Picture 1 (cartoon, rainbow, N blue to C red):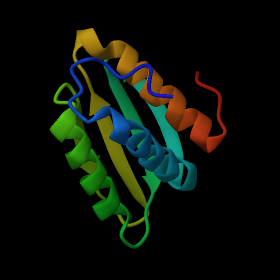
Picture 2 (cartoon, helix red, strand yellow):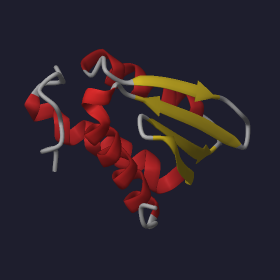
Picture 3 (cartoon, helix red, strand yellow):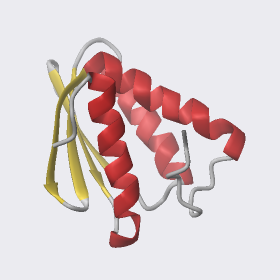
Picture 4 (cartoon, rainbow, N blue to C red):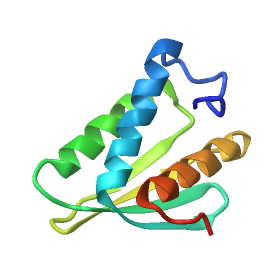
Length: 111
């Protein structure tokens, strides 16, 4: 489940499946779009709603705390919330895996 997690991640191993599940739950219930404008950048679009932006911000803040190679940018909106995810070249495979998880959770194929 978390075999793609790089060694640079400092989240305790026992907590990793829980974090993956948090992202999966967010993606399954809210995914409205996935695009990859660049090999090191992923753009996600989530449907908005009460508390969604706060949930996204909390999750990416915690993820940034253990995986400093991620750069998350949240674009708030009442109907849609954009989430840009960027990594450095050494972590492209992690971004690939995140894209696959987002698409799979939404029931889409990865382009």
